[in-house]
Length: 332
Ligand code: SF4
Image (cartoon, rainbow, N blue to C red):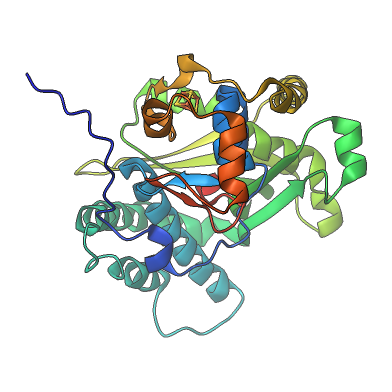
């Protein structure tokens, strides 16, 4: 058996951003993608967070997630505009399909197009009526939080940075009005393990922390904030859909903040230690670390040599410099 060990990387589809043309849209700089890298491997923190390198080819699941978010962003922006009384020639569903059409004729995107078309059909069938009756849109793709630069006094007091990009914020009128964050997810399955994972998810906890303690909903004129609805659509031939409420107690959010304080301190030690590699994290439950090829190809690369490369504005083969240090993957 011949096992290919090639590290050649070909980009077989145009980047999502080039086709979508939606801009970074205020993607979040200290969200769960940043923290995941910082908490999993010091070297990944250097390459992905400090230097801002990205692999040229994104994993299929990430591109599907980005496209699905783009579709729902287009859809809910149109719903929001309608609710504000704007007259538009097309329905939100038509606008979302038009956005999706951009991907149909681009090489390498047809499979993603077909998956998201099925998901959108199923989504509109399942939720359009209910949303129209119960959801008042407050914001679509809204970035909030603090960093050392934006709010030094908050960082000083809490000991960590946290930002997030909220997919959707609604006032839910199905019972007494409440304010909710809605987090869109595309997943392979809707089994209990997938569902339960969202109730202990770093990204969701970060949003809930900001929703509970950072945004003063009452001062803004909104009803009480109750938590996040995880809005799951599967990529199956017949997509399944579910909305899962996540509303942890204050103790759970305080425990999460305690953990973030530790990891913020820990990440500050990495530079003095040369951003060591953590080989326990190279292969993961869903695929590999984004820098797997780089670490395998160039085991002698030190943090210093990576920093020198970046200082010359060079990037290793198979990778590119993220145009902005704000992370698009934060939407996933
Ligand atoms: S491949 Fe392994 S060692 Fe390299 S950055 Fe990723 S997790 Fe760290």
